[in-house]
Length: 91
Image 1 (cartoon, rainbow, N blue to C red):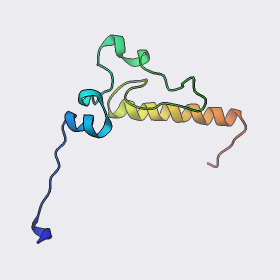
Image 2 (tube, rainbow, N blue to C red):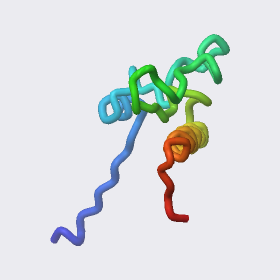
Image 3 (cartoon, rainbow, N blue to C red):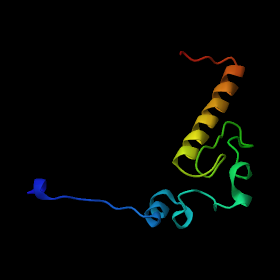
Image 4 (cartoon, helix red, strand yellow):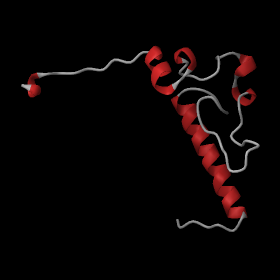
């Protein structure tokens, strides 16, 4: 009988708010206005030692591609930091 049951899940911005704790389902992070865009967002490096940020809420901004770029940028920062400390990785 279970093979005859079809389930579809539909998500809305409100689901994002519940699942990811995005304020009111804000899928692009901060409001998409000039005063909160691009380099006016949170940076990838924090004042807390070894705490780095990567998301749609940080530089360069919201959305899937920007979040991926944020993660790539943060990874490069961490790798450069570790290489400067003499930590090397296999390629």
